[in-house]
Image (tube, rainbow over all chains, first blue to last red; front, top):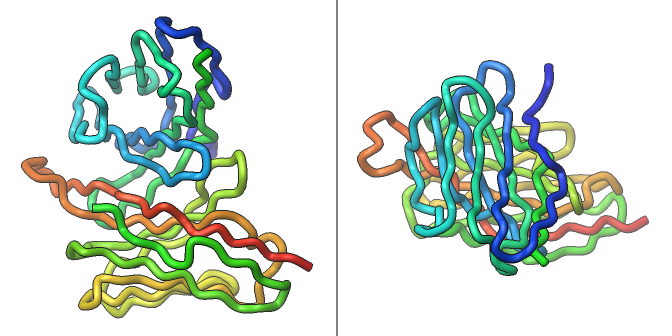
Length: 115
Length: 116
C-alpha cells in the first residue's frame, strides 16, 4: 500500500521561474489538500481539491498560485514567477472521506528553494 | 481561526509525562493530532469526533471537551521516540461547499524534546 507520493522532494528555482509540484494521493483517496510550512512554523492550509474540482482555495494566494487535480494523473500545485518568499516546504495530504472523520495522510513534502 | 496550542515547547526526561493543550475560539467538529519529526512529514496520531471522546494509542491518549472547545494530548512514560513537534488540527465546515466538507486548520505546534 503506497502512501502519498510527492515529487520532486527538493526543487530549486531562480526568481521568476515556474515551480510545479506533484502529488499522487493514497490509493482510493479522492480528496487532496495542499499545505505550506515555513521553518519552525505550523502547516498553513492552501487548497482542497477533489477529482477535477476545487472545493476550497481560501488559503491560496490570489496571484501566481494555481492547483489542479485532473481526472487522470496527480494533483499539481503550480507557482508562477516564483519569489524568495515562496521558499518553503509544501506538503500534500489525501483522505478517503471529506467529512469530520476524514483523517488526512501526508506525503513527504517538496522543499522549494528560490534563489 | 487558528487553534492555540500550549505549551509552545517542553523538555522531558525519559519516563516523564506531558500534556499538550489545544483550544479554539470556534465550535469544534473534530480534533486531529499529528506528530512531525524534523525534516519529515506529519504523521497522523488520532482523531476525536465527539465531545467527551477519549482515545488511546500506546501510551499516547487524547480527550476532547466539546463545550470548552478544547482538546488535550497526554503522553505518559515518554520515550525518546516521542520527540518531535505535535500539531492539533481543528475542523470547521467550508461555507457553501454543499458537500459536508471541512477545512482542517492547524495550530502552531508544540515542540517536545525527550532527553535520556
